[in-house]
Length: 237
Image (tube, rainbow, N blue to C red):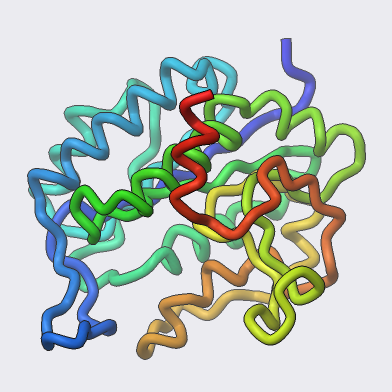
């Protein structure tokens, strides 16, 4: 049996979505509900097949969206998960991360996994699909190696730790590219308190920088590259 209690936080948006980023043609990346629901079911299948579901002590599913989306999540999630209903106005990962920060006091000794519906606003985009596959392989399918790294004294584990030393001039605050990660509650308690407000594009990226926003963590990066289509090649091996 696993000695360390494990909490998993998964975040999703099944319809609607943000309006902050506009593309050159003036369009915004609103969500295709059919694609999003398919991805949700795929990721829940990964959660179960990887055995992370069976070995987790607590699983939270954050939902940005209304009643229909919450009903779909309830119908297609594994039994025993707790749904966090953030409502239609919620636009980013912030509400689920804010919940996490409020939850961790009193859970010292736990390890926490955060992952989400990566690439849902880019239907069938090859890079997003390769990137998500790489993240799921290292953080979800191989969750035990991440938990073991934390047990060995690392503060956080995952894939694509992007930092100023390796990417000077591009990265200022280190972060997990793609926002799938494992870390300890002990480390999370050292991070600055996250505001609930999301006022625009800059705040949209705040959750991505969360783990790197405080003292520099001791990092185990299982895929030390900038996310690229090369992730697809690595997945096929």
